Every structure is written in C-alpha cells, then in structure tokens.
Length: 401
Image 1 (tube, helix red, strand yellow):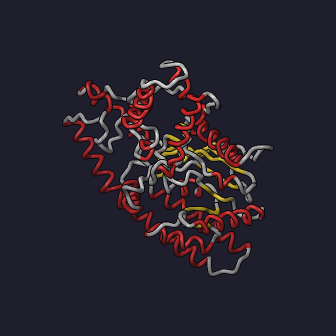
Image 2 (cartoon, rainbow, N blue to C red):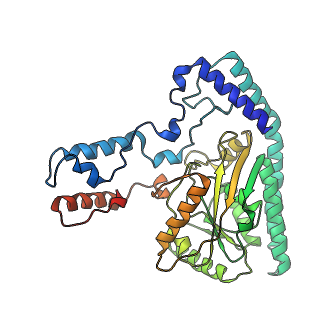
Image 3 (cartoon, helix red, strand yellow):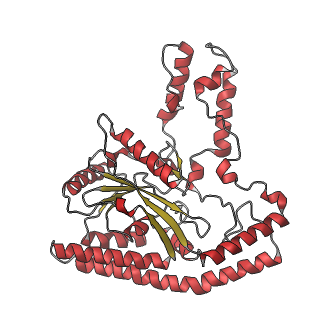
C-alpha cells in the first residue's frame, strides 16, 4: 500500500513540476527558509558597523533582526503544519502544489473516495471499539483492590486498546534499539508532536503517564485510565498542582516495581520538525532518564495537532482521513545526571540527544510561546548585553543572542 501510494505521489509531483515550473521554485523552502539569516552574535554583528561608541547606524542592526523575525521567525512556524516537499494527494493548499490538470484531479478525487468512503468507516469503527474497550476495561479494573493481578490486567487492557486505536489510524511504526526500552522505576522523556504519541509508545509497552488535564473526549479517557493505573493529570496553571506532581513523581520512581513514567517535557505539540525547550521539572526529581525520539513521515499524513485550531474530535477526523500514520521510534541509552550538572543543563543534554537521533532541529525557545507572549526578560537581556558593549565593563554572553 505504501509503495503504491509513494509511486502515485512521485508521479503527481512530477506532473505538477512539469506543468507549472514557476510554482516549483519554492520547493524545499520549508527546510532552507525563505530568507538567509546572519546567525552571528550581537557583538560580532555590530563590530562591523562601528567601534565601541554608540552610533545611530546601530539601529540598522536591530531593525534587520526585527524584520527577519517578522518575515520568518523560527518559533511560530513550529506551531503550524510543516511544508511538504512533495504532494501527498491530501491537499492543494501547499504553495508548491497548486497546479491543476484533469489527470491530477481524477487521481485526487479517487483518493477522496478511497479515504472517506472506504478507509474512514473502517477506522471509525475500530476507534470506537478501542476507546470503548479502554473506558470500560479501565473502569472495571479500577474496581479491583491494588494487587499484582490488577496491574497485569491494567497492562493488558492498555496494550490491547492502544494497539486497536493505532490500527484505526493505519499506523505503521518502526521501533529501533528495543534493548533500550524504558524500564520500571525510570522516566521516559520524548519529543511531542501529537496526542497519538502516547498511543505510538503504549503500543510497545505500558507507561504511567503525566500530562495536562483535558476536557471533552480526552477528559473522559483520562478519567477512566487513572482508575486502573497511577497516571498523573494536572492543571498547568495551578501552582499547587505542580508541587503535587513533583511529589508524586518522586514517590513513583522510588518504587522500582512501578511502570516507567512517560513525560513530554516540551509541554506542547511541535510540528515534527523541531525540539523546543525541555522544562527542567522532569529532570530535578532524580532517577534514570530514558530518552525516546519520535519522527513522523509527513508523506502519508500530518500527525501534528494544532490545538489552537482543531479540537480533539476534528483532529482525529483529520487523522482518520489521511492515508496512514507512519513513524519511527528510537529508544536511546539511559541517561543520568552527571556530577556538577544542574537540571537545566541535564535537560538540554537530553534534548540535544533526542534532536540528533530524530533528525530534528534543536531550538532553545519555550513551547509556551505557542499561547503566551515573549517575556520582558528576553528583551531586557538583549538591552543589557548592548549596554555592556557600550560601557565596556561587562562580558557578552553570545549564547543568549
């Protein structure tokens, strides 16, 4: 199925490029960017304009950086679907693939019929069965007293239902380095693209999950799951919830018989191209960290969840009308905090390892910028660096530029 689909995609892309060569100029723009940036630090960028004294020409440097951010900043573009290198027969909205011909239109219409009239009903049926069994099964298991039997039944229910739900998405998952699968009593951290990241990992093993409280369908599933397994759901805006989560995590990893904890330290979904700042809280509680890199193949479907644009039901409908969900999962060697290393440094080291393994771009920015404005401290830090350059009595921190 995948080989046939890839052959059609290649044929369609070639037809588009032949029929509309001018529109294919921007091919690969998503990977190389539409502007060429000067990544040199502030100190080097300004040194070519003047000596140490202030000059009005300094304004041009800051204006240039501001215009670059307006045209194409490296943060907000990570919160929208990644651009495609070749047309996947799912959409014509990509600027590179707007050429229309009768044969391409016929192929696209046939694809719509296959996806909506054949695949969608089957997938909805499987999803309904999987979610229903998960809610009913975890509710029933939750009535049992804590024992090894309850744990085994909980794991069986979670594994079975997650595998059914992955089938509902026509999921094809390639697991690498299975010898490094997270062990009990450890903490599994992974990059976050979609809520189905949980399904992808839970298909190959059981986890105690930590995450944001949701409403709607996701909320129903969360409340059912926590009855059978010690998952931790919290409200990010509540400070008391944060302290409670930290305490719960410390108690959890102290028991080496409990399932590994699954955490997504970015705190939000990123569009399958990058890894953004890991929150340090997951790395302050101690224990062994098991990094996992997840990378989806956008040729078969866009797994990214833009939660500000789609609710959970709409998102799942988009997934079920895609061709398939194809992804690679890399289990990585366990990592521990080194002597003299603080939580932030440890988090950055783990993030770098995941980015390298998954072929993702590593960014220092907080994923919270998806819904919040940039903190004033970021602007003030740049102002302080510039002031230090002028007075000549401070060192410049090139990493903060």
